[in-house]
Length: 166
Image (cartoon, rainbow, N blue to C red; front, side):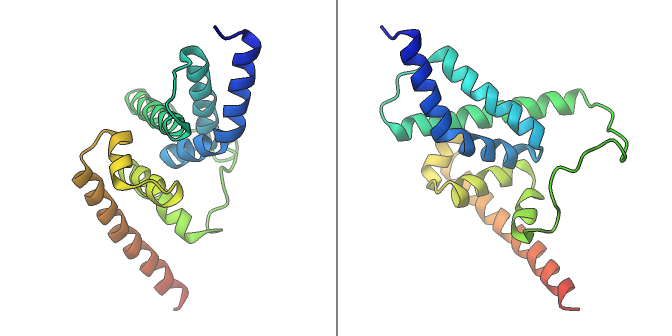
């Protein structure tokens, strides 16, 4: 049986090792800094509450990613079913500097279903089969989403590039 001290050390090491990845995943799924921070905390709270036995570091990482994505889906469902009023322009703090990275801006402009698979494939380096398991979709669906996302990104980036050269 693990002591509270052992659990604390374990959670601290997991947070140190994976918090950036969990935050980036949540941010890519939600496009909101504050919500991504909240989801990150919730993911590690869930880890602390459940303390699952992992077969390997990869299993642990995949579990964290899956929980993150599921929490983001739940958050999005809640937001869309209970929309809130936007803050006025004067009160809203800027979330990021637009235009600093046109590729990242283009990825962030994709619908969530595309953003998630692009992020996991290109930023986290997962294979299609692994992404398929994480998001609960068929491998062919994941490949199709990647193909469509690439097509959209190509169109947006070519348009941006053409605009800059005029």
